[in-house]
Length: 533
Image (cartoon, rainbow, N blue to C red; front, top):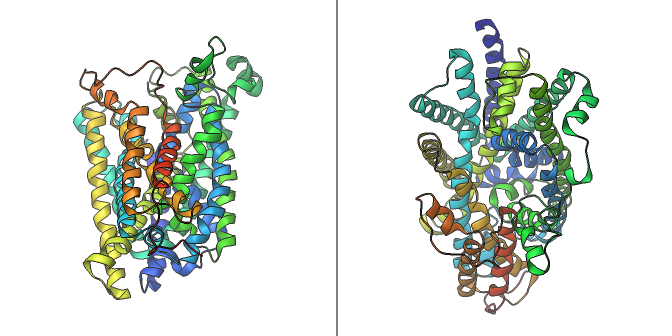
C-alpha cells in the first residue's frame, strides 16, 4: 500500500510543482494593476476559453455531476446546458463591447458611467459578498477525497473531530497554494494555470469514463439491460402534469429542477448573470486581445459545456451500472462521494494520482479566479476611489496583492465554518442555502445591468437600489426561503398560498432579473449620466 501511495503522491506533488512554477514565472513582469487584472489584454483566445471552462468547473461539479447521473440514472441535468449557449451569445453581443469601450478593470465601473457611484457600489458589494460565500463554501468539497483516503488507509471512518480537522487542513493547503501563484502572477497566472487544470480535469474524467466502461462485463448491452433502455424522457422533461388543467398543470414546471423550460429560460438568465455581471467570470474574457476573440472564447465555452456535462453524467450512470455488477458493501451512502470512492479503490496506480490531481485542479481553478476577481474589484471599486485616490500603479499593484491574501484568509474562514456545519451538525443543510445565494442576489445585479445596456434614459441610483431590494424580496418569497430556514429549527414561518409554486433554483435569477429590471426602468436617468455612445 505504501509503495502505491508513494506513486500517487508523486503524481500529485508534480502537479502542484508545475502549477506553482507557472504562477511564479508569470509574476516576474507584473508592473501595475492592468498587468495584474487584465494581463494587458494579451492572452490568446484559446487560453481564455480553457480558463472559462476551469472557472465553471468546481470540485462540486467534479463530484456533484456524476452524483446526479448516479442518483437519477438519466441525463435530464443536461437540459440546463442548453440555455447556457443562448445566454453566451447574448452576453457576447450585449455586455462585452461596453466593457471594452469603457476600458474597465472592474465591470462595475460601467455602472458608475451609466448611473452613478451608488449603483456601482451596490453591485460591487453584492458581488463581493456573494462570491466570497459561494466560493468559500464549496471549497470543502475537494477535501472529500482526503476523508475517503483516510478511511481507505486506516480501515475506519474518521470521527467528527478528525473529519473536521481533515477538511480544514485540506482547505488551508489548497488556499495557500492557490494564493501563492495568484498573488504573484495575477490574471496571467490564473489563465495559464487554468489551462493546465482544465486539461487535467477533462483528461482524468475521460480516463475514468473509459476504465468504467471497460470494467462493465457485457459493455453497452449490459448497460442497456440494467438501465432498462434509453428514451427521450431520459434527456428532455417538461414538468407539466397532464392529469391537471389550468394553472395547476403549469405550476409544477417551476417546482422541478431539471426541465426543458428551466434549461431554455431559467438557465439562460443564470448564465447571463454569471457570465455577464460577475467579475469572477468576465475578468478573464477582458484579457483577450479584442472583442472578437473575447466573444469567440465565450461562445465556444458554452458549446463545450454540453460534452463536458455529458462526460460527467455518463461517469455517474456507469458508476451505477458498475456497482450493480460489482457489489461493494462499503459504497458511500451519498451519491456525491461515489466517484471519489471509485477513484480511491478501483483506479490503477498513477492514474489514481492523476484523478486526485484533477479534483484539486477543479478546486484551485475556480478558487484562483474568485480571489483574483475579488481583489481586483476591491482595489478598483473601493481602494482607488475612497482609500487612496490618485494611487500610483505600484501602490495599486501592492494593494491588489495584499487584497488577494486577505480574501484568501476569508475563504479559509468561510470554508472552515461550512465544514463545521456540514460535519458536526449534519441536519443543517448549509450548502444549498449558501450556494443558493447566487439566485437570491444575481438577478438583482443582472436586472440593473440590463436596464443600463438596453435602455438609454431609464434607471438612476435611487431607483436602482429600490429595484435591487425588490428583486431580492420577490425571490425570497418565490423560493420559500423563510420557511426553509424556519424548518431547520422545526418551525414554520408562514403558510404559503396553494396557488404559489415553490420555485426551484433555475428560476430564481430569472424572476429576480425581471422584477428588478421592471422596477428600475420606472425611474428616469439624470442628465449627468448619458448612455454609452
